[in-house]
Length: 215
DNA sequence: ACTACGATTAAA
DNA sequence: TTAATCGTAGTC
Image 1 (cartoon, chains in turn orange, cyan, blue):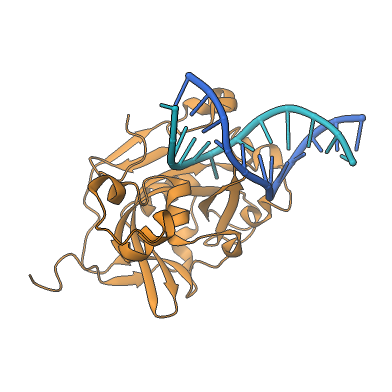
Image 2 (cartoon, rainbow, N blue to C red):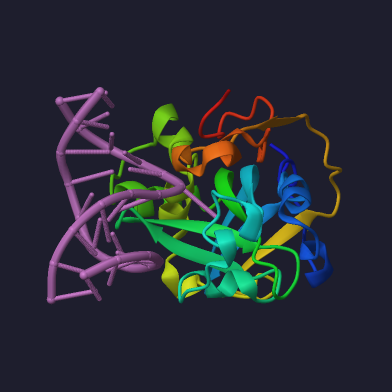
């Protein structure tokens, strides 16, 4: 077993990476890495599924029609920050703010492929099991927006966090080209959004086993 | 203050 | 298919 195999050589994404609309940012975020640095511990996951929320004209977006509240405020702020909100009173969802100040677009991170710190992710998701993870438990670690936040211990404490910072940040792999097929389809859980529910603004890496819902 | 509902998940 | 569970937002 060669140690370097499969270990990405990570470089933090700069601010300008986020300065584009949410659909374009969604596509660019696929294959990138989310890192949660917790003192001596580190969690890493590869982004395999995302959704674009296109702001005031998007009936599925929290910022639809210019809605601006305490919750949605960070979406109106600088790009490259985290928008974390509570859903169904018990789960968190992580978004990446896109575009630029004043444009309330964001990308929902829907699924990750676990890369590093699976033991901690398992503890965060299932508690102290002491057992080897089953294949199903492994897949279920991070294959959904609420699940990945639980696994990565991402809570509202991280709402507004600068993703070019040092606690929670995004990276690309220095040595690896983005080389995968992308599936483009409709977003999940937005039946209320009228015509917007048919917009193909969900993107995922084809055949990746950690994608939440396949077409 | 009161009410309705959700960018989900796990269990039945 | 359905219940869980409560923050958020809109209304009174």
